[in-house]
Length: 554
Image 1 (cartoon, rainbow, N blue to C red):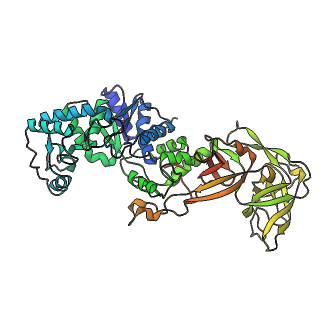
Image 2: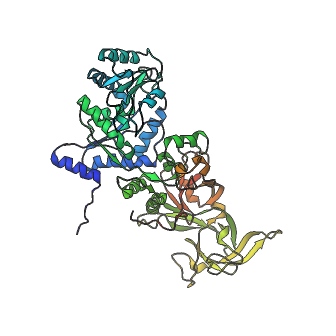
């Protein structure tokens, strides 16, 4: 019996539109403003817009909403392209709102001629005061009833650069008493004498988001314009412009945005973190940016799975970051190569081992039956973790202690015979003996031990640096706490271990590979520091240290 198919509400709308013949081809768009780096919140919109178009045989445009030259940079355009491609999606057309500046200007002229737009001389403060409030009606501007001819002349003069910034604006002429504040004669154009990253100095007037967005959708014949819930009040204006211009009727649909705990996802707040040096850069592995997550070692497959699990809803909620980390662990467990790395070394001398260094075999990934094996040097001197030994252990301590026995992963069973200390009483090394018949895969010793330790051979070990990342904030919802959100930054969000010792196979580490350091967590090469030495970022711990359990079904 096949599983019942469950559609989200947008899929239901699309299937109804296709069945009725309203559309033959589904066309969506992802329209980021290039004023910052994409973050995990954007991944939901990306997966939804691209995923729906793929599912229903349509296509998606990548359109940069570049109508504010003051905040936009080519750097952000490049990073957005890279992030969308990294997530695994391809767009049919790469477009820019600035591609339509002439056409949008023509639309504005059309609205002026129809009596639906006028040039206003009020200042920004006066416009805000005249607008009223949700409980009080607005007041008409004294310039609201200018003639069509005067408005055309003034608007053309605005374009020609005859006025300074803020001297005049173009507004839609709708209703200053409308219950929806967005329809109280909203701004359509403002004057900005600023250099644009694509059009240079060709324009000194720029369309506002509400005017540029819906019309750009219409020009591209977008059938389903998907956005987050905060744009519900804008939908009526979106429809008003399209109706008055009598152009292709694109339609807006809203879904709940992705809100993640223990982080912030406001571009303004993220920019503060970068500018004030609370983080290294936009791609700092603690940042919720897609570039930061990529550098930290998150996989696009895990992020897509996460977006699929949280689903598409009409109500806002705060998603537990533990679910994202769970998806990352699930994927990394399947693909990560296993390696042994010792962070805090304690030297062991195996006193009865009198052979040369021998090469043992270790499986790369026990979850992948087709994975390779690697050679691991084993010899008389090895390192284990200091906390894997206790001189006076409690009950049920299954690691190494005087007289105790453990198995070395992929190697032999050893017994601790002697603890060597310096004059101050500090343990400097352990003398142990090994059981020759206990070699992994060939064990005939008959000895059973409960503990298995990772280790590295001293003379063939390579050194590296590891960076242990944790959540950037120590409270669930820092943006909504009283005071400055930056006061809640987790002081332990980054800890650096400058020298660890690893098996030599890690010398061949590659950027696109993921690694599980046995008993330590999942790691990846840092993309910025590996040119002069090996630096690994911890992607995620082996288990969730913040919550007891993350349920699979959410």
